[in-house]
Length: 461
Ligand SMILES: Cc1cc2nc3c(=O)[nH]c(=O)nc-3n(C[C@H](O)[C@H](O)[C@H](O)COP(=O)(O)OP(=O)(O)OC[C@H]3O[C@@H](n4cnc5c(N)ncnc54)[C@H](O)[C@@H]3O)c2cc1C
Image 1 (cartoon, protein in one colour):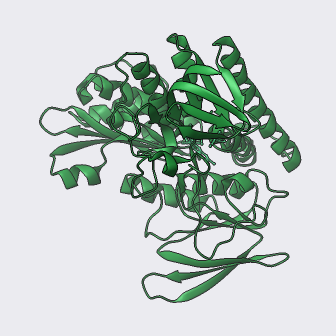
Image 2 (image 1 turned 30 degrees about the vertical axis):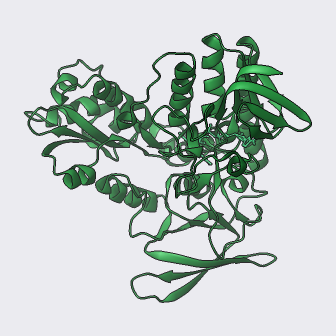
């Protein structure tokens, strides 16, 4: 019952940390309160939402593009129960995969909810364990909103939305962030009338403003309605409907909407319930995150924290990278995460992806930059595949040409962005990308064209 390292939480932060620490020779256990491994990401987050996005995107293709390609015949019918079954199967394959990796790497899985009872001491149920080091990777939960009581049936968070009993005729999404728009997209493609109510005057705050505008226009074309600058006051469920009231911020006027289902997606907050952090004296930030130093150490010796429960973007790959870095640090190596190159992706159609600086942050910093932009309309592959909506925008230093950031809205943007991430890690200039031969015909050629546009100009623009 004694370990070099006990990790609390088996999400992408925790399980990656466990595997890397075991690979580096530490005796490791990972405590998980959920029935299955993989955390929010594999059970109720990234993976199930992407399964539903894939299924419904396939439906969209069949309904909208098949006929134009000479594929005629019976249109697919939606069997929602079966679609949920497919999603459950995908979750099962992934969570069992982590179980297999734990066995392979000799990581012990301790089942139950952990409490830290003192430095180096972890209690799970009746059993106490000792560890030289403890890593907290307990993740996050949906943030509540005053006046909106979640029942996970008619007023749901993303967790309930992934398990709805039936496809709603009308869905109101509160919050135009990543999760709200991904889930909104799923149901819009399934035929729901989707209205998104957002407090700010724009969607996907934090993303490039031009991308956000194009994105909103394209989602509206797909049938989604947006009410921006609207502060939701309440959501009240009756037996059959939910009533949402909101106030328009510009004139304080009050309005009401009705729907079968409301999805609350106004953000997530760190989850630390039951860990005993206050008694242990672990310092928290003002935003309720566990405060850590640059090496993920908390204010208590021997206790570390990573992932959604600490500061930084709440993303699975950020948690994974921190998991690897802290494992390396604890094994005596020099673990490191480059926070300047963490991509963010929205898996709608088209996809949205970004990395590094935006025009807003560069303007704020007073840094001189140039923009290279290329539309997917000029990309042969995209045109052939009904994927000409969107563009690639690369931001480079005006003097040195060094790539500072990139913003893509278009087909497989979430994959395309990595070419730019690698370039940024190597401190590349836009010209380096522009002079790299790109296979034809690929979507990647649009990235090269945007890099060319940072110099003497794109060819196909
Ligand atoms: C609908 C949705 C879609 C998302 N899509 C994406 C996406 O496409 N890409 C992306 O990068 N991110 C996405 N995210 C965010 C991503 O899921 C999180 O950033 C990621 O899971 C954080 O990993 P983590 O390891 O910090 O914590 P988590 O994955 O939240 O895991 C924490 C685990 O700790 C366990 N735990 C908590 N307390 C205790 C305790 N006391 N004892 C034992 N176990 C405990 C929990 O049960 C949980 O399993 C999505 C999130 C949601 C909700």
